[in-house]
Image (cartoon, rainbow, N blue to C red; front, side):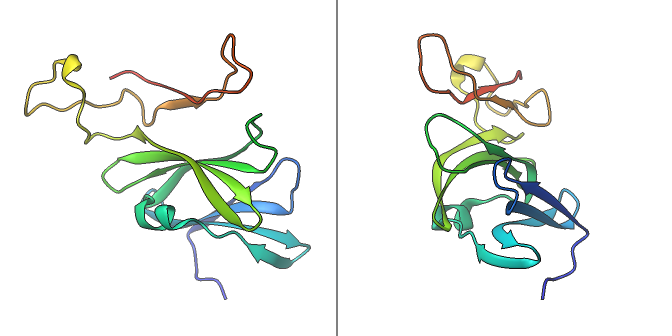
Amino acid sequence: MLPDFESVSFYAHPDDNELVAAYCEHEKQWWGELRVFHHTDDEIDWKVSFPKQHDEEHGHYVVSCQWLKLSISDKPLLAVIESTHRGNGSLWLFELQDTTFKVLLKTSVRGQYWGPPEIFGIPLNGEAHFDKDKLLVSYPVLEGQKNEAVVITSSL
């Protein structure tokens, strides 16, 4: 039996619509759970396990979720941006290995409470804020490279 959720957003894998990420929201932009599973018709065949690192460090809610195809892997990849209640958040890039996710990348991509480098010249008790709700993430193949890069951009 599933608990009651305010809303559920489904993200089917583009090559296998039976592989689904489901963001189950308890309270909008406050609390939710990301669940990933494989189903056949109305039956769940198996659930994906998240690694211990994610269990210990994940945010309170999901800002965005996207299946990716990148040349670094022929396995399903899931990019998830999460946030805490205070507005700090991370980009997680997961690779599906059998029924378990492996963390390929975890990095900060949103937030108001972070220590900016000294070069920015922010006073000791000052704050730096990202310009938008979250940093922009793209996966281009840069000139002279054969694989995609993770490019994160924004302004302060």
